Structure formats: C-alpha cells, structure tokens
Length: 227
Ligand SMILES: N[C@@H](CCC(=O)N[C@@H](CS)C(=O)NCC(=O)O)C(=O)O
Image (cartoon, rainbow, N blue to C red):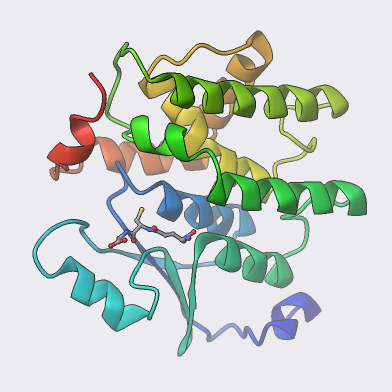
C-alpha cells in the first residue's frame, strides 16, 4: 500500500462509491467522476435520477447538502465536487499541477469555475445531447468570453495541451464548460476551440458522454432553456 493512500485512510478493502446525477445534465457530477477516472482508483458509481418525484429525499439521505456528487469512502461521506477532488488529490499524486504557483492558480480557477460564470451556467446549461445555434443573452456571452480569455491566458503560458501542461483537476472543472461551447455553438478563439476539442476527445470524457447520450430521461426545463 502506498503512503499517499494510507495518508487518507484508504486500504485495498475500502470501497469508493460516487453518487452522481443524470450524465447528460449533471456538470457537477461529471467533474469528480473524471478526476476519479484519472486517479485510476477503482470505484463504483450510482446514478440518482434528478428532478423526479422523491429525488431530493434520496439526496438528503446521502448528505445534508442534498446534492450530488457525493463520494462515499467506506462509511465516510464527502459531498461537493471540489472537496471530492481535493480529497482524491491527497490520495493520488499529480492530480494538481506539480509547480506550487500553478497549483495555487489551478485551485483558485476551480473555485471560480464552481462559483462564478452564473449567466453562462443559467442560459447554457450542460446538455450533452444538445446541438443548437441559439441567440444567447449578452451576460451569458460575456461570461463565455471571460472563460475563453482565461483559457487563452493559461494555455499561452504553458506548453499544453491542458491548462497547466499535463491534465489536472482544473481541466476536469473546465470540461462541462467546454461542452457548453459545443452544445450552444458559442463563439470562441482558435486556442479555446483547440482546447475544447482536446477535452471532448479525452477517452474518459467520451465514456461519460456515451452513457449520457443513451440516457432515456429528459429534463424539459433544461432542454427548453434559451431559444
Ligand atoms: N457545490 C456543489 C453543487 C452540487 C449541485 O448543485 N448539484 C446538483 C446536480 S448537477 C444537484 O444536486 N441538484 C439537486 C438540487 O439542488 O436539488 C458541488 O460542487 O458539488
């Protein structure tokens, strides 16, 4: 057993289970799922269908937060996509950038991607099945342009193909945004476009997307947003 696994109390016998929402829509769930895949730790997943009768009680039975994702580590519960990712980064090396300054920047950017860009999240919700050319509100396009600008800045300071050279948790957090650019045909720079293609051709992302595309459930409220 390696020291970093022991440092978070993980043994070969500890079961990891990630509770997630609908793969087509749940951007929050996708992020730690991608991080778990990159960690190469064995994990189980359980999907809780969102926005159907009784779903909230199921979420509240899992954690006080009443949201997914939730990671169950043995008998312990870790809610919140960033907290799960931080915990995984303690268990497995190299999920954050190696350079200390980059590591801090990656953490800050993840927190920003989690809390900001509200108009982009609201008017262009993650919807992997969707391909449309809609007219999006100004504040949504401004958020998208800001995201594009940050991506360009980080990509130009590193050798790529990812934000901090090698794949990191920051790229997991950027992936649902990348899919929004594709779903809603949002204008973007050449650099951002190349980065989006990189994220959306990642083999773990493609596994998630394949499941999303055959999900039978629809959330009409999300499907009808903008247009
Ligand atoms: N800050 C949380 C947000 C999680 C979140 O809002 N998840 C959505 C699913 S995409 C959810 O569970 N919604 C159900 C609800 O709010 O009732 C995180 O990063 O994990």
